[in-house]
Length: 340
Image 1 (cartoon, one colour):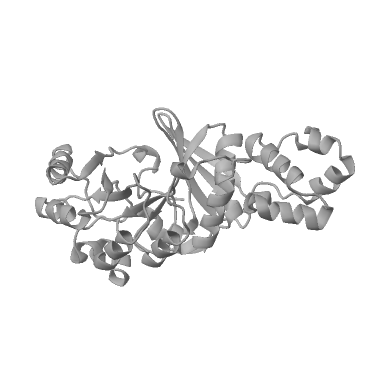
Image 2: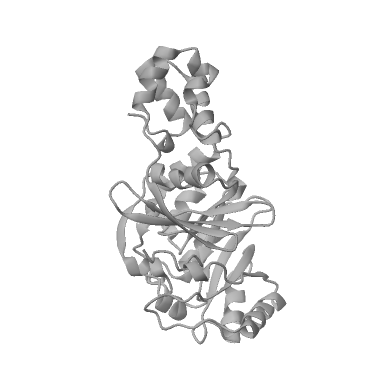
């Protein structure tokens, strides 16, 4: 069987060569027909129409896209869709409309081990990691089943991407192929809660255009450890050391995500400490108001608190973008995935 959704182009080429005596010519054609054209009429493509016996054998071996989209939820133009996997477990993905394109927020695991205290996915516990095919399948379904023109991919859905490092990075390779999905590395972002070994592994892969986001949420170890247990294993000093050694491109920046929680991490002292932590890293900070999560007794900040916190950072030279909540009504906001 051939699961094209889990195979980089070079591996697909080797498979066709070993099993059918074919090679790159047909591998590129198959990638094109599946990822660019949705796989609806592969046999009519000239590369296969002229090799009917080969296509008849290949068609029987091709594995369909993994998972079935069961439900969709909309808030204005934002869309969350739920996929039931072959073992019955479910994942969530979110199509986020932007000014000139759509961004797809994909999941890398069913549940999560990291236990962040503001995250609905954490309340699920950890079920399992997704395969490369299940990750890529979310992009395929968003494009070809739901019909959205997806230009950006953010690994910010359910799960910690660096806890599923190999499958995620293979998915990046599949999605990046110009013969297939053709999503440039600069249009893909991997977000981590601060798994330092994952940052170090990624730094060795020589992918400077792939964007790295880090969920910070606390400017000191006491605050961050209370919100994010991962900080007890890799505290802020270790995290910063890994970022200082990371090979950013000449114009590259780290994306920092800071969820502002009323009375927890929103004081001006927190803002000052955050600015000190960031310096001298090249950072764009996304400031996000806390989205309500079932079972957590946290509150969102007021708009005034958001503005004051952002201004304090701006005055210290930090580039801040205020991300006002989107998708709350369908539990699609930051930290809300997993209510399934």
